[in-house]
Image (cartoon, rainbow, N blue to C red; front, side, top):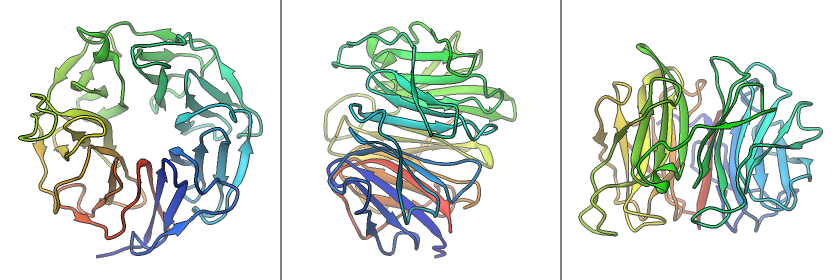
Amino acid sequence: MASDFTIGIGTVGAGLWFSYDGGAGWRHIQKRINPEGNVRALRVDPHDPHRILAASDHAGVFVSEDNGYRWERLTDVMSDQEVWSLDVDPVDPDRIYVGSRPGGFRSVDGGATFAPMAMGIGAECPIGVPRTTNVVVDPRDTSTVWAGVEVDGIYRSEDGGDHWSHLGDIGPTPFHGDIHGFVVRQGRAGAQLHTTTPFGIATSSDEGKSWDWHEFGGFERGSGMPHAYCRGVFVKPDDPDTVLVGVGDYIPGRIGAIERSVDGGASWERVELPIEPNSTVYWMAMHRDVPDVVAAATIFGQVLLSQDAGATWEKLPDEFGEVRAVSLSPN
C-alpha cells in the first residue's frame, strides 16, 4: 500500500511521535518538546501542509515548519495550562486559536503572542475543571468560531473570538453537553453542525438552535451501557458525505469501534476492523492532499490506517502508551 504521507501521534506521558513513511517506522521527538510530556492537540496548518502545530501541557504551543522533523516553541504563555485543541483560521494564517482548561487563547500575529479569550466558561463543571476539547473556525465565515466544552456545551463567537455566547442546553441532561467532538459540515443539502458526547452524535441544521440525536449501539462486553460512548467526529475534506465517529464502551473503555456514514449522517454502519480495539477509538486525522487516507488511534495506543476513506482498515505494528492526538500530512 502507498505510504507517502506523515502521521503524527500525541501521547500522554510520552510526548510526540512522527512517522514519515505512513506508519512503517516512528521517530520520538526529543528536542524542544518534552519527550515525557503530554501532547493533546495537533493541527496541520491549512495554509501550509508541512507546517504543524502541537501543544504540550504546561509548556506551550510548538511549531514545525518541515512536516514534523524540527520543532520550536511559539509561546510559553500557556505554560501553566493543559491545552486540548488547536485551530488555524483558513483565510488568515495569523489567527490561531487554542482551547485550554478552562477557556482558550488567541493569537492574531501568527503565534508571536497569545492572549486569553473572555469566553465566559465557568471554573467548575460536573467533572472538575471544564476543558475546551474543540475550537473550530467556521470555514463558511471565519469570523465565526465555535468551541465545544467538557461539560459545558457549545460556545460561539461571531467576531473572531472577541465576544462569546453560550448556545444553551443541547440535550436533556448536563452530560449531553459533555462535548467531545465538533465539526461544521458543508454538505450538498446545506451546512450542518455535528457534535459528539457520551450519548451519541447530535446534528443541527439551524446553527445550533435545535439538535437531533443519534445513539450508536453498545457492545456485548465492557461497560454494559446500551449505547456507545462517542469521542471525535471527522468529515472527509473532499467528500462531506463521508463522516467518521470514534466510539467505545466507555472512557477509556475496554473495546472500541468506528462508525461510518457515506450519506452525511443519515445512516451509519459500524465498520469491520482487523482487530478488536483495546479501548475507545479516540481521535482520527485526514488531509485533502492525502486523498482517502484516514489515521485513527485508540486511547491505549493502537493505530489504525485506512486508504479507502474508512471502508477497510489495517492495524499498524507499533503501539503507544496513551494517545490523545493524531495528525496526517503529505510528504
